[in-house]
Image 1 (cartoon, rainbow, N blue to C red):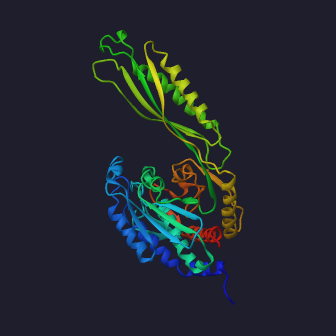
Image 2: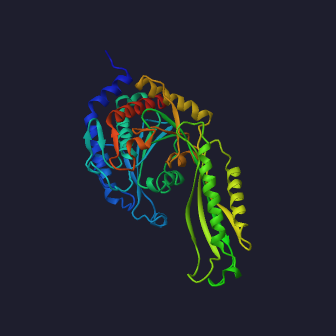
Image 3: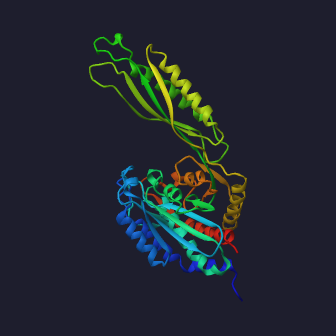
Length: 410
């Protein structure tokens, strides 16, 4: 009796499970900490691993002038592209650079140790496990290639820890890739559809310099900033009362990320600058939030006569939410996950940075799905003893192969 397409995929994945674990183990053993972000050796090793699997790959060098602006040298991205014929393109994106190892590990950070069904190692739950799922899902599609059309790509990047500007965003901006849909790392038991927005403000507070022995003859910019900071932290404490209706998003946050000022140890500071990072819920209006913060800053500054301020929007990254078309695709993805898990599958949002933002901002319907967890703290992602349940790797690979087989079905 001839096997169905689903049975052929399942048979392949069962037969190659040990190979997949070996591939992930080899990935975890590659040091790719960022900083320092020296990716040449890591890239060469990953190219060798992918080539051994006979995958069609290309390496795209980021121009040195572009990379150096962000303190990178010899930076490149790897694209796996498997074309089954004319049709849509599904991009799977994973970064393989990792947070620094840090202290307090009980397992070897690059040992890829397996204990009680979990693999331990830096990056195993933050990019490398997802890449292992993406790669073997594509390999499984070869079993039913005659039934498929369109293209599957995997984007392997090396600057995810610093925002992905020279990875996912660069590949899209340079039109190296123009996907119809995109999937980026996420949890194996849920489907991510939302990401918080980011509002960055630069604040300049100007006063009047005066000798330190006669401060009353000047206008102390730093004193005015002290009132601003008090207002900012009181405002931040109140944000916990605001909750997104989307599971996983939680409350908005505010952080004063930088502050500098003063020109001499012998004079009143006449200028202070600070930077503010405000994370936006999908339900919030960015303009209204900016106006609220600006008003708070203004009320603080006027407490010191002679001091003025200017607030400038440095960056606004809108929150990501699934539109009507993307919601239908999310339901399809939920259906595949639910079939494998035999359970109801929720959608969720995340409040951390993700490559989803770059694809969504390019107009590409984007979802978070992979071998990890919707709760990054559960796997100690970027912390000591980072780990991944190998059964979740199995689940994610099976789901992804089924999704691709469905979405690229002829």
